[in-house]
Image (tube, rainbow over all chains, first blue to last red; front, side, top):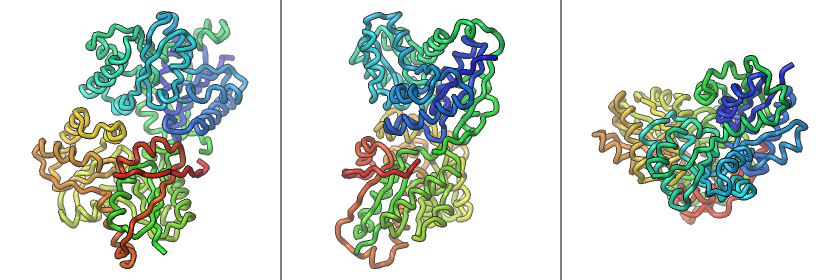
Length: 266
Length: 266
C-alpha cells in the first residue's frame, strides 16, 4: 500500500511543487487539489483564506491523504495553524522549507524575497527569516503571475518588468540569496537569474518548490522515500478544468491528465 | 424621494461606470457592490458566475435598488438572463450599450473589441455585434488589468504590451471602432489611443462605461434624469476593503468613502 500525499494550492501554481515531488518521492500516490473556483486567495481576508484552506485540506484527507503539502504561499502564510488544527496528518507549507534552505546555505545573511502583494503584506517570509537569523527584504511583484500565465516566459516585457522590480529591490538591499516566494516563479527562474546578473547581483536563487519537496521527503518514513516505482497522481479542481488542463502541463512539466471537478460548496 | 440605482461588479473596475453615472444622473442615490471575495469572475464557470451575480443583484435590490447596472463584462456576458429573472427591476449590462454606441456611429463597420480572456471566450461581444450588423474581432488582453492595478498607466511596459496586443489584432482586422470591453480599460484609454495612432490606426475608441451610463440615463423616467442635486453613493464589498478603498479612488476619480463589508455567504 503506497503512501498518499495531498498537495493543495488555490490554482495550478502548486504543480511546480508536485513536479519536484514526483522524482524525489516516486513511490507515493499524489492527490493535487486546485481550489480554482475561489482563486486568487491573495486578495482575500485571513478569515476567508483560512476557511477555504481548511475545506481544501479536509477534502484531501477525506480522499485518503496521509501527508498534506500546502503548495500555496498565501495559505502557508496565513492559515497554517488552522489547517494543522483541522486535520490529523502532518502538514508541510512552502515558506519554512524555503527559509531553512536559505539559512543552511547563507547563515545570518541578507536575503531578498520575491512574492505576490498578498504574501508580502503578510510579512510571513520576513518573520520566518527573522526567526532563522536572516534579514529579509520583501518585494511584491504583482505582474509576474499574469506574465507567466500569459506564457511570456523569456520575453522582452517580462525581462523589462523584472529589471524594474529588481532595480527597486536592490536599491534597498544587497542579498546573498533570492527566495522565490510564489509557486509561479520557478517557471521564470532562468530569466530572474539573468536579470540579477545584468544588475551585477550574484545572489543565489532559492526555489521554494524544490526546498518544499525536499522537506516533505525528509518528513516521510524512510521506507516511503526508499520505495521506487512510478509516482501516480490525480488532479482535482473546484471550477472549470479547461484552463487547469491547458496551463497545468507547463507547471507540472508533463500532462496533468484528466482533472476531476469537485465541489467545496463555496 | 430619489431613485436608487444599484451598480454591481466583481471588483472595483465597475467604478468607472459609476464615475460616468454620477454627473449624468446626479439626482439619484447609488449603491455600488464589489463582490471582491470572489473576484475575478473571469476564470469561473458560467454556472458559478450566474450564482454569484444573482446573489449580488439580490443584495442590491434588498437594499433598495430600483434599477440595476451590471458594470461587469463577465457577468453581462454570461449571466444577464439569470439576473433579469431573479429581480423585478430593470437591468442594464455593459455590452449592449457599447455595441449600440458603436453601431450608431459606425453602422455595418468592422470593430475591434479589447477584453479579458474570459469575455473573449464567451464571444458575447461578437454575438451582440453580429446582431447589430457589425463585424467584430475580439482580442484578449490579459495583462492590461494587472498593469492598471499596478498603477503602470502611462508606462513604458504598458505601451509595449499594448503595441504587441494591438499589432496582433490589427494583423487580422482593419477596424473603424475599438470597443473597450473591460471596466479597467478606461483608465488607460489615452495610452490605447496613442498606441493605435502609432500603428497607423485611426479607429474611434468606444468606452463601454460611458455608453452604459448613457443607456441607464435613457432608461430612467425623465423626472429622474432631470432632477439636479448632488449624487450620493455608498460602496459595499464582500471582502477586505483595504485594496478597494486604496485603488477605488483611481477608478471613481474621487474618494470612495467608507466601504461597508457585506457577506454573500460564499
